[in-house]
Length: 331
Image 1 (tube, rainbow, N blue to C red):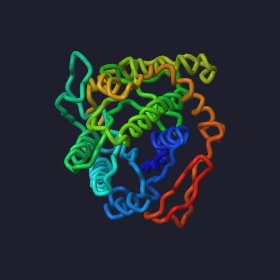
Image 2 (cartoon, helix red, strand yellow):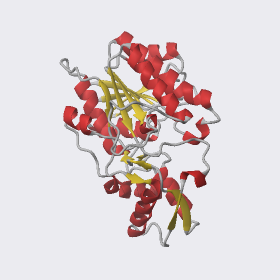
Image 3 (cartoon, rainbow, N blue to C red):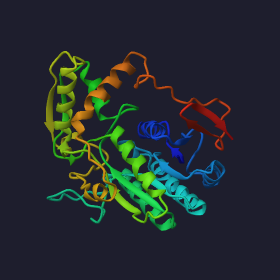
Image 4 (tube, rainbow, N blue to C red):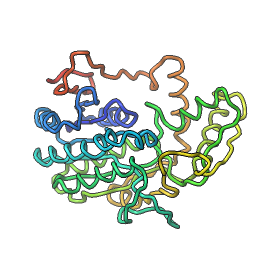
């Protein structure tokens, strides 16, 4: 049983990672932004050293692709400076850093999915900030596993599935981009995968540090993703009317951020090294739709989920340590 510090612990990935770690029998140092601001290097180093964590999983990120174009300093701080601070602290502590990155580091269209060795190129602030974060981690000298993933949708937080469902409540037609390809990725199996690779990284003889890709299959476009959501929601009787998805081009969408036209990821490497299975993403739509319904009823997205809460007096140096019996304060 290991003690794992999770940053961004109140986000859609962080919450699932916490649950997956606890289910696997590990203890969790829960560090949401309100408890640990990763852009402050002294606080980061203190949190990691004082907690005596065995590893760090960084689920913290500035993830609003569109707003990043106007808030580049915020995106850069969270996605580049924060990971740099975590990596330097992990190097000093001698523990591995597991960092979540993005498919948006790729902007070129290929005839096949991108591998970890493909050259990176990105044309949006979000992608650039995440790529800078990767490079800072690599340069830090820490033991790292960078996991690039894509088009995340999960039971916690906001994501494409929940946004589509919300918009469909009052509309019978939605325009969705058709000329961007990628891999929708359910967050729950991603969290399970992060736990498994963290456990592998803690083995004394592990040497396969580096960059990996993990996503759902099969690749699709945003408009087809939306159609799959509505079909599943109708089967579950969450939607009682037909929703017509109008396919539009990226140019018609008029986005500030230039998103990649083809960010498909090849997951062969992570399958071979860690023996992981890649999830078929349509199989996970139902649980996210159920979470959406529960939230609309004022319930937690997951039954029997009791998240740790922070008091108003919580300082940046304070984090939560969770185990199977519940949270306890650690200052």
